[in-house]
Amino acid sequence: MRTSTFVLVTEPDPIDIYLVASDTVVPSGTPIHLEIKGWPDSLPIGQIQWRPPALFDTQQRIEQSVSLSESVTIAAIVTDLKGCNSTALMELEIEKVKIYTPNVLKPSVAEEAYFTIFSENSLDRIKYLRVFSRNGSMIFEQSNFPVNNPADGWDGKWQGSLVPPGVYSWTAMIEFADGHIEQQQGSITVIR
Image (cartoon, rainbow, N blue to C red; front, side, top):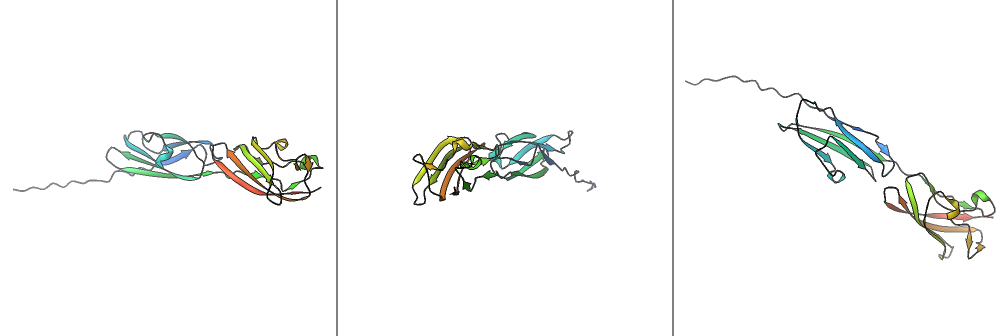
């Protein structure tokens, strides 16, 4: 004789996790603390995966710290011992560094007598600043100096004499606090 038994299998309650960050918009290279929240303490965790994996030295942690040089979407995937998982996503943005370069140099006015690069604290240093004459000859070069220091910049002179009024091109290689390097270029107008 054959008997049958009725068994009701219910779906487990869904587990919803979310991410908490110390900040979601930061200057490049600033550490961001991340933490997975919402996982019940009574439910054992089988596996934790953080994405993109290249940003995380260790995967199996509820809390992480990352330093970024570009904006990214972070994902955390938590799996319980029965294979059920939950995923949380978070956008982390890197502030654009505001870089200011004067467009006029007036050697006769103290506040406008030098040309250099100005920025917030997320720039580490200027690897080089070069200024070129109208025919393309390099007339100024300074290497490895801090931003925001006009006296380290160009004073409108070439070989000890003031250059004629006009437009001069420049190029600079700048290093950010997180170590990445960018090239900038533009022009400066010398007036008297």
